[in-house]
Length: 147
Image (cartoon, rainbow, N blue to C red):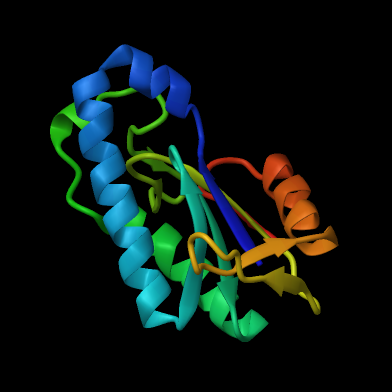
């Protein structure tokens, strides 16, 4: 089970609401494209956060890695890269380590119960696994995946 959250999204939205909407559209499209590529299931999205389920933990890890890589390699507008928390950052060997909005990701795996709501027809996950993934995600920093 994977939960994502964009770091400093409230500040980004307050700083430049129109630009944040553009960032969110790109972010959401990338997440959904990768969910399809890695056979995931979008349980829920709210604001800049996603709850996702995967058949295999290895697919979830591959999804998370691909998400961080594609977010960093995306050709972000210079206005985005000028925002606090979206700028390019390099390590001591001058390798690019951050570029664009930072997304923190928590991943937990195990057997989980789900139910299919009568109204929406979409599966909903509940119990310890989503709660654990949320707690793990809350400890991550932007650009980081924690298991």
